[in-house]
Image (cartoon, rainbow, N blue to C red):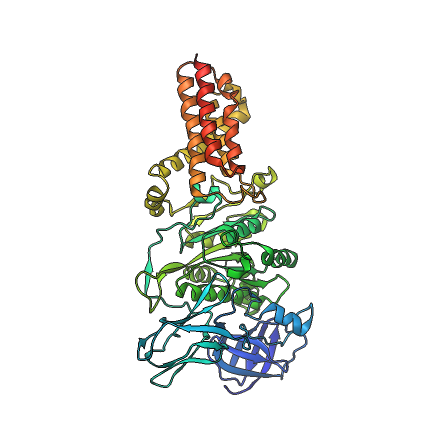
Length: 580
């Protein structure tokens, strides 16, 4: 323990202490109520601390005590199914201690230290182990096995290892040098966990959402930003991704969102069923809730807490999807603390180091070979960050700095949402830089002409935008017949492929095979229609054909192959009649 000091000055969550011997990012206890805080600046005899709890009522002269440790999280079995606040205090435990309103100065450990877990050893006496080696397993939830890792900085020969039921504090193994290994380890949240080797992002994160999977795919271990104005559907999109993407573990950070929105997430998530296993989705989820009325400093920490937990499961060989909703509120917390520190403001009052902090956070994603693991074991952290630009202005600093470091940009559009086009992703402003790296996977696993069809779809949608400007001036009848047909094909793409009903039992998730078949059927109509137009069939007759509309039935039918084959047949027959 360091020397005790006293409070000299207080400005909201920023407290200046004197007479304390501390290092940067040390965890300190502030005031008589021992509020949790972190050292963020040291100038001469002043130690500047950001406090993770409300500082109302504390006064100069109260004691400040240094713990000598950085802000760390407890990593071990029991994290899945948990709902934490920004500094890994379980909300249900806080509720038991305090009732419905969170008071300050209350401590709660991140893991349950009384619960016993069944531990099965995987290494033998006399075996050499090092950081990251899996020494045993615990069945954490029905679907997820928690692999117990040797903590960083520890290596040696196993002297003794036991199986049986243990709490997270009990010793399960001993090394010859006398070190004890438990089911739990601690890790400072601001430090990225090391890995043995970073791998290229060559596998897609399959989301089951057609617009993402077809036009703007995201790689496992990749990074996506999903910016959008209020009411454009960010939270629904993130919940769809959490529910359906093919990651093993979900870490969902509600960072600075409105309390009622977070309440919705917290009350809905425990009831969601995992479509893959039929068990509750919470069995493989960690929720971190930090609403906009909770202290700002804890909001700033919540992002790091979440990504540290994600990296820990990655090191066990799992693929993890981390949803941060929303990074704008995180940046606002940094702005507030920065202004209280009287730092020089950057653009729009954000701190000058905003871009560095965003890059540091997103850089913790990746597909890796974990330390101490064989080459065939790999884990990944995929980060999907929601951004809430004020008024939907994508030129503001948080969106622009996020764009620098993310390779997939899913731009939500309020106008599309108003037209009831969901998911309201604007296909003209969104992009994915993973298309080329993922192409070999799609052509091998789905179809060799996957990319060809995707490129064709995109060029039709881009042409539609140009044509619509002309249509607004002169009407669609004044367009050449070929352009009129292209507008109709673009409508089919928008309605049959890009629109998807998150609340329909069948359409909520679409496999890649189904997406490809719908895409091929629409392109089949385009090919047949263009050929008929060339052979002299009038455009009005082509636009009046009925068979093409049946393609949309495949979206809502489990037996989609049958529906699409019938649609193809009907389209061919209808056009054969037009030509005769």
